[in-house]
Length: 236
Image (tube, rainbow, N blue to C red; front, top):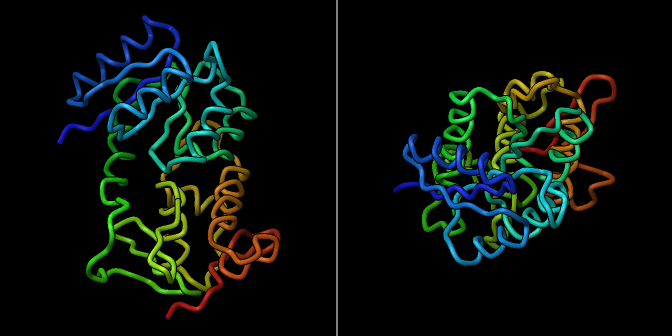
């Protein structure tokens, strides 16, 4: 089925251009010119991805990204004219899956959209009827690597973003091994301009808050000072 992509951009010309590119690639494009209109569209339509600008008339895009993450793990790409590292880091910290500037090549933009959608197709909120073959269990959690989901002992799925699921899957598959931030960046294919160690730190921090009993004293994703991170939980 065609994926529905919501474009949140206040510049009508730019919004129309993005919409045409997506439609030409086979997607269904839905448009919104403000944060308020974005939430109206989310309530009215089945949205598979959000393309979000930061400079909106009613509310800053970073605040909107935080609000989106508070209610959903829907794939979220920031597409903005802001090129500074501070905004890029802030967006990743609140849960954006990717950060692109408006100078991005059209082919690269569409490829990132496609890849993110492909990684999230299987990440549904439906009840798992049969235990998948490619799963790992640790600390009461069941990680379905192929299905892109993490389930607790009560059968409730953790509200992780696609990038977070990919990161914890990579780490779990290398349990006991220390991975550098650069290795983790490469593994989750976060090819963002001007990569920074803080990107991985932000992902790890968010995951800890969702799966660790005490995020300040992590037992699953532990820091190895001066090197990187290690998946320290025992795989059952």
